[in-house]
Amino acid sequence: MLSVPSRGFARSALDLTALCDWIESSVLFDQETLSVPLLVDVLREEQLCEDQESAYVIVNDAWAECARRRSWIDSAWPFDLTQDTINLAREWQEAADYTFCLLLSLTIRYRHWAKTCITDYGEQGELFELMTMESLIKQFSDWRFLQTGWSRSRTQSLRDVVQAVASFLGEQEVANIYRWTKTTAKDAGLDIVCQRPFRDGRVSVPVYLIQCASGSDFEQKLKMPDLATWKKIVDFVVEPRKGFATPYAFADDDFVRYASRVEGMLLERYRILAAGCNSPNWLSDALHNRLVAWSQTRISLLPRRAD
Image (cartoon, rainbow, N blue to C red; front, side, top):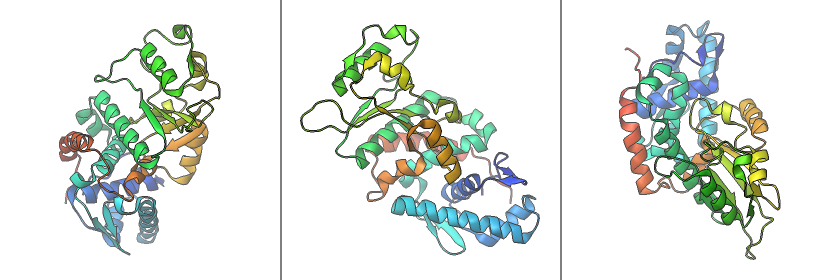
């Protein structure tokens, strides 16, 4: 079983999302079967609950939340849930998409672990962007997509990005883009462009400009991409909408609050992983293999609870 995280597990405010992520991680990465009574005992040992009755209430709430997660992605959820146990349905290597999102979420809970083993944020961001792109392609088959985010393997200039976006959407590029952006800007906060075209190929169609944020600082990026800037560097006939993708899971209140700040479409963990509802092996082989390789060492270094 993984160690109880220091963040989100205060006795005065035990975060339900953090608790569910911890339960799932312990099962997925240590191949354990966890039961309601066992978890109640752990919460009491860690002095996170005043008494056994309150511990049962919290664990039962976590069971209900896990059941809700399962309902959102069906067979893509890699666990089996009974009335009082949760156990592994698929090895983590077979659920590389779920594994990747869960590990990214744990960076908030285990700060020391994150600093030790997650040092290349560029690779992390590129992998999450690719996964989001493949998910959207899988779920919206009649849409078109353009990947624009900067990475070490895709080092285009902002001018190249703007030209690509304008050409992809059939819009007009504004000549002096650096009047509105810094000369050091790489992608101006834009990672994926989504368009639902009509057969006539003309403008005035649904368009989303999406930011992918995989790090623990995702809240600082909720306003990206900045539509005010993009409307100055591309002459849109009709204003596009915004989208924001993140691997984190949110309680309903947090989801609404973040969606309001995005002012557009919020793609959190389960909306992205819904691509696997009808096909658990939805990732391309190349991306699947990269996610497994990225996850392997990081899983082995996760802090474990002493028996």
